[in-house]
Image (cartoon, rainbow, N blue to C red; front, side, top):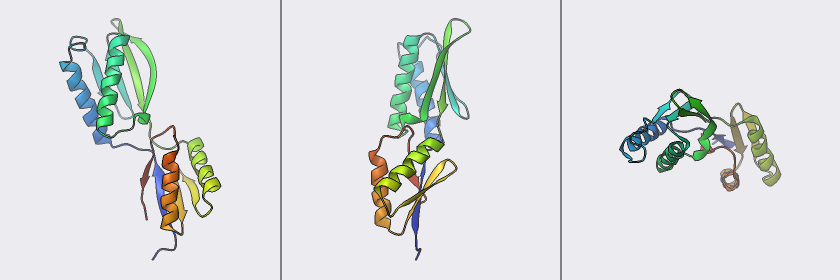
Length: 163
C-alpha cells in the first residue's frame, strides 16, 4: 500500500471533441439562413482557430454557434482566447482564437497557495504546466478537489493521475 496518494491538476482539452465542434460549427454555418451566403470559414490549426467572415454581425453569430457546440461537447469556454478582429482582403473580417493548454506559472502558484493556506495535510507542487497534489490520506485529496472546484480559475482545470 502506498504511503502517499496524489493527483495532478492540468488544463487540457480533448482534441477530437474540438475537431467535432469545428465540424458541427461549419455544418451549421452552411445551413443557417443568416450565414449561408457569407462565405464564412472556421479552420482549426494546431493551437488556434481562424474565423474568416463578412462582418462583425456574422462574426458574433459564429462565436455563438462555436460556443454552443463546444458546451454540448463538454469543452470549457475558458480554452478559447479571442484575439483582435483584423481586416482581411476583400472587406472581410478575420479573427484568430488561441487555444489555451497548460496551467500558467502564476495560476499554479495561486493553486498551491490556496492549498497551503486552507489544508494543512496537503502538499501542492508545480511540475511544468501541471500541479501535483499529494497527501497521506485520500480523504484530504478529495477535500482538496472540492476546494479547487469551488474557486473560479482563469483556465479550465481537470484532475488526472489519481493514485
